[in-house]
Every structure is written in structure tokens, then in C-alpha cells.
Length: 135
Image 1 (spheres, rainbow, N blue to C red):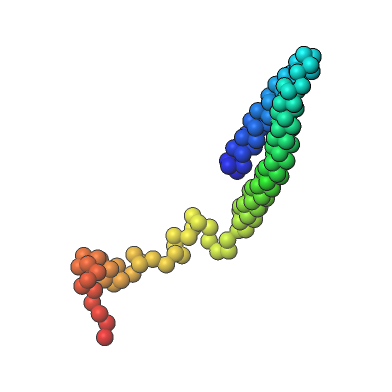
Image 2: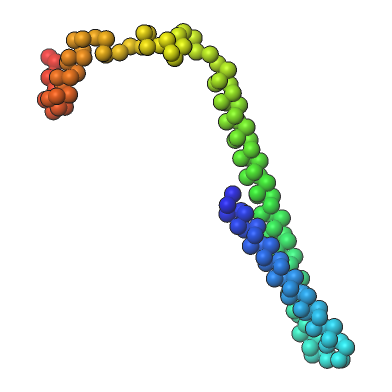
């Protein structure tokens, strides 16, 4: 999204530059016509054509950029809506069985098994390399 917004700013700057070129060329063309300087009038006409071409090009690119930006924003909004719906759906689902506060009594735990707890402490104290192998 950041790249598209940067491209949009760049195209707006290009449009401003093209508009300045057109304004300058129009001013010079007016002066050339008043002074009957046909050579300067031809040069300024080329400047006007160039400025108009550049302006038209930037307008087309800006339209394309804004279409891409709208598509990205739509996808982002849809993704946010989907995420919100998923959160809402999961919040509405109540787990069957004990609530998380009551689940300590029903959770399988090695701590409740003295033999397994002793074995695990022994293994951890010896390290993984000396684990006893079962036949």
C-alpha cells in the first residue's frame, strides 16, 4: 500500500510539473504571437504539445494507480472484516466441558504422576545423551 501511495504522490508531482510547463509555454506563445516571432511561436508550440502529452500520460497513470489502490484497500477491508468475523465467531463458541478456570482438575499432567515425574527429573538431570533405552 505504501508503494502505491508513493506512486500516487509521484504522479501528482509529475502533473504539477507538466502543468507548469504548459503554463510557461502558453505565456511564451502569447508573447511570441504578439511580437510576430514565428520561430519562437513554433518552439513554444512544441513545448505546449510536450506538456500536454506529459499531462495526459500522468493522468492515465494516476487513474491506474488509484484503481490499484482501491483494489488493495478493498482487499484490506475484506481481510479485516473476515478477521473480525472469525474473532466474533470464535468468541461466540463456548467450549464444551469445564471452563478454563475449572480445567486445572481435568488437565492431564505429569505432575500428578509421581513415577513419571521422578523419571523425567532423573532424565533431565542426566541429560539427553544418557537416556535409558527400553529393550
